[in-house]
Each structure stands twice: as structure tokens, then as C-alpha cells.
Amino acid sequence: MPKNFQRNCNYPMMPLIKDLATLWMAKRVEFPYRCETCGKGYQHRATLVRHTRHECGKEPQFKCPYCAHRTKQRGNLYQHIRTNHPGKNVFSSSI
Image (cartoon, rainbow, N blue to C red; front, side, top):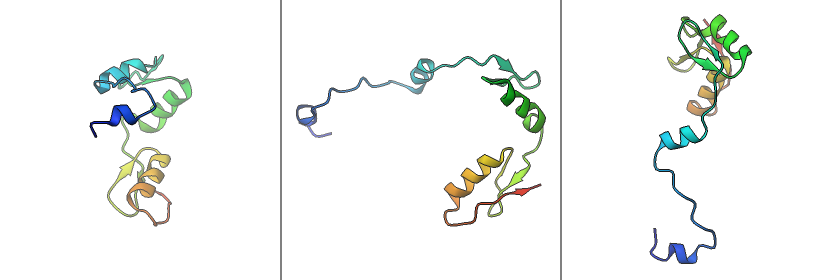
């Protein structure tokens, strides 16, 4: 940073967060719904139900048509394609 950064800035300096653990503790959320198999916690019962039916202990069912990436949720595959394969069609292949 330039030496005169603080003098030329009209905004007060925001306090710096020293590490990610501090940030995580500041935004900690309770997870009242827990998977009995793997222990993952969820805020909403519906998310736990989806996890137990389609994800927990199961192989990923959505495969990227452009690489070897596989995921358990279709939305994560769409995000992967948009991020890693720009300009390609966004569609999924269920295994």
C-alpha cells in the first residue's frame, strides 16, 4: 500500500479479521437437523431429507459431459460447467 493511503482515504479503515476461524465463529449457525449416518448438520429438515435420500453413502449421479467431474446435485454440476467450461452447453448426464 502507498504510504499516504490512510491520509487520502475518506473512509475509516475496517477492522481486519485475523483468520477465517474468527469469521466462521462470527457467523456460526445452528444445525438442529443431523444425519444419523454421517453426522452432517442442516438448518432445514427438507435439506436433511434430500441428503439422506440422494446423497449420504451414495455415489455422485451427475457427470460432467466435458471432463471426469461428478457431483451429487444437479445445480452443482451446472455451476461446475459454467465455471470450468465457459461457452459450453449446460446440460447434465445422469448416471
